[in-house]
Amino acid sequence: MIDYSSIQVPGPTITDLSRPFWDGVQDSQLMLQLCDSCQQHVFYPRPLCPHCWRGELDWVSASGHGTLKSFSQIWKPGHPGWLPAAPYVVGLVLLAEGPTMLSHILVGSHTPCVGDPLVFAPTKVAGRELPFFQTIK
Amino acid sequence: MKHLNPRAALVGIGELKPQRRTEGISTMEMLMQVSAEAIEDSGLSVDEIDGLLVAPQVGETPQHVPATVAEYFGMQPNMSNMVDLGGASGPGMIWRAAAAIAAGQCENVLCVIGNHRNTPAPRSPNRNPAREFDTPFGASGANTSYALLMQAHMAAYNCSPEDYAAIAAGSRANAQCNENAIFYGKPSSIEEVLASPMVASPLHLLEIVMPVAGAEAVIVSTAKRAETLRHPPVFLNGAGEKITHRAVSQAPSLTSGPLKPSMARALTQAGLDVRDVDFLSLYDCYTIMVAATIEDAGLCDPGQFGKWLKENGGMGPDARQPINTHGGQLGFGQPDLAGGMTHVVEAVRQIRGTAPNRQIKNCQSALVTGNGATMSEAVALVLGADL
Image (cartoon, rainbow over all chains, first blue to last red; front, side, top):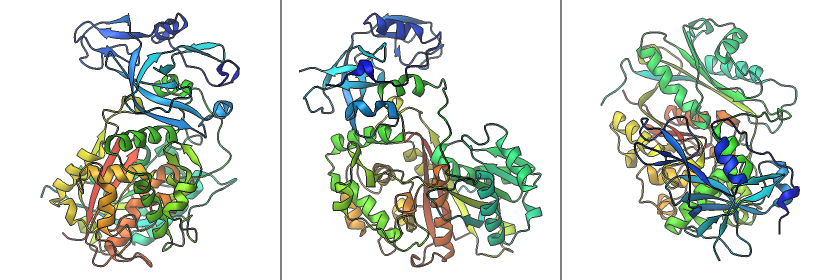
């Protein structure tokens, strides 16, 4: 079991624009932007909708459900801070709302497969909640 | 055929031998050395160089890169710019040089790219979305991105680890014919590739390029000027470019990339069927990149690259369509952003008929690809001997 709370790794570089997303994670909420014109969800945060460039973007709660599009078990991390956690799994999460986000995937003893259903699993890393996902047993 | 008018030709090449370390040497020194080699190779005089294309120099020259290089070289070009397309920067320079010549702004463009390999520069905080939304999850670096692409490709088409490893083994076999290659004297079998340590599953260490210092230069001129120069001209017969995303999470597809439309455009411009290309000079930062490119080129159906490679007779100079005869970056080493230009330089050698120890018989045409970031920045070129 990886002790995520004690590893020293780079946190997110939060801006005013993205703060609602990260504040949501602290409250165990996965927040996405929704375009009031084309009705598509947007991730990562933008000042304008990248799909239609027209509507207003509102912050909404997402379901927290997703599907594993791809994954990798990382044995040699790109950042040395992650070494104590290796090997760990990162993956591409196709959110039920449409966008894809990259996240850390908690797999337990399960061997992940492309297509696995996932659920939002906020996890404290170096003093901050991060929007991890976990495989559903 | 819809050629650029006036047509452009690649008339000079330079390449520094890759090195693992270059302590105390600056990128600028290496760029000047390799440029001198390319100018000498072309038969042009330095005074005739009136265009200059360069690439980013991370950690060394943050801004004003073209002017910094021009001043260092003692040049006052009529056209200068920085091409920032990762591994596609080198091929991206070639058609931009041709376009600048066609626009009447210059006649002989030096395209130069390279990097030193000293103690790494300190990591700097930045605000691009990948830093905010990928790095915090433990996903920094290209290895993770290409591992995700490879896993998706394997899952979609059920290709075997041996299929991908054959690309690394074939590249290192080719490197045995290039004494400048970093893997010269160090071939690896498919079994050895698969026995090497797992870095980011499903990518093994020997499926990943070795970072090296190095530099590459190519001079692009008009077809007319090329007639009077030292070597038989190599013409730019087609080009295509496409940029689809930056972070792998935002890729529109994980199994097919922007090289697909880029190669299609380049081949259409050249009036050539991909099956009739004599030499495939394919960007190969990882084994998966070559697999995806073979499939995106239309050489075989998606998922069939392993079978196609076997039917092709491997990758060597005697294969039906030889691939990366210089060893590719998997065998030659990856001189950072200059890695993509090694594929241009080798294509020029093959079409000239001057590739040492590895010349393809009667090589009249080449498809060159460049790829940057996360299979997201793509440039394809078709080069040829015929007017």
